[in-house]
Image 1 (tube, one colour):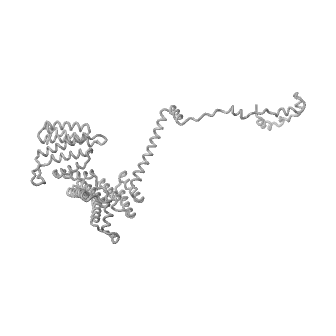
Image 2 (tube, helix red, strand yellow):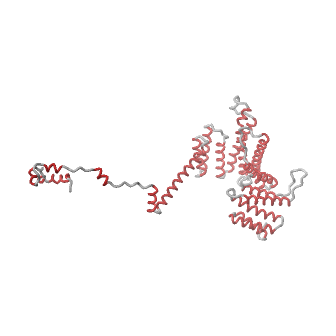
Image 3 (cartoon, helix red, strand yellow):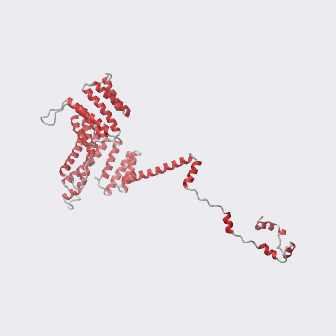
Length: 447
C-alpha cells in the first residue's frame, strides 16, 4: 500500500480526480451505523507498544572480534602476503631504531664536548673524510672548526682539540701526504712537551703572573700534565711508524721518536712507583698500552737487524700483556724469532760470557713452545684469528729452529704441520712460507 503523501503529485496533475472529503451521507451508504461514528472508528488506532516491537525486531549486537582473531583470519586468507607485510614492518621499524641509535650515539654523542658551531664544522669535515673523500673541503672545515674552538675559548691541549688535530693527521696520511702529516704531528707534540716542561718547572704564563704562585699553578695543572704527557707517548709512537714508512724511510727520526716515547713512559711509571700517585693526577697508561709502545720500538729494532736490542723489549711487552690475550701469542713468537736470529753478542753485564748460538736457539724453541701452550688454553670468545694464525707461525718457527740445528726430519714434520694448519685457516702467507721451506729441504728451491 502506498503512503498517503505519495499520491499528492498525481492529484496535482489531475485536479478533476481529487477526492472530496467524505460526508455522513456517504458513510451511511456504506451501511454504517447512524451518525458519524465511523469517522471516529477510522481515526482510532489501537495502542502500540513500540519499545516491545523495537526490542523484538532490532538485530542482536555481536561483540567485536579481537585484534589477534582478526589477524588470524587475515593470515588464513592471505598466507603469503600477511607474513611478508609483517616482515617489512619489522625491518622498517628496526631500521628506524638503528638510525636513531646511530644519530644519537655518533652524530650527536661524539660531539657533545664541542660547542654547536664547532660541532657543525666537524661533522662536515668528517663527512668529507670518511664518506665522500674530498681532502680540500675536509681540511677547510677542520681549519674552521679549530678557529671557532679558539674563539669559544676551548683549551688547545684538551682531549677534544687534540683529537681534532689527530684526525687532520689521519686525513693527510689517507691521501698519501705523509710528510705533511708528520709535520703537523711534530707541531702538536712540541706544544704538548712545552706545556709539560712549564708545569714541571712551575713557570707562569703571561696571564697567570700576580694571580697564583708557581706552587699553586703546579698543583692545579698537574692533572693536565699527566694527561698531556700520556698523549705525547702516543704521538711519539705514531711519528715513529710514519717516519719508517716506505714513502719516508727516515729511520733515524723513527728511532728517535720511538725511544723518546718509551723513555717518557717508563720514567713516569718509575716516578709514580717511587713517589706515589698525586691527588687528582689520575691513572697512568695501562699495561697493554705500555706493551704496545715497547712492541713498536722492538719491531723497529728487529727491522734494523738489532735483535739484541729487540729481545728485552719483547720480553718486557710479554710481561705486561694479559696471559689470556691472543696478542701474547704473537709477542712470544716475535721474541723467539728475535732470539734465534741473534749472533752471540757481548753481555751487557761485566764478567758474564755471551750466550752461545746453541743456547739462543734453545731459548727460542722454549718461547715458541710456550706460545703454543698459551694459545691452547685460550677459548672463545677471547680466542680470535690472531691465536689461530699464531699457532701456525709458532709451528713453522719450530721447524726453522730444528733446521738450524740440522734436524731435517723434525723440520720437515713441523713445516708440513704448519702448512696443514695454515690451509685450514685460509692463512695464505703461512702456506707459502711452509712450502718454500719444504722446497729448500727437497733441494728444489734456493736458500
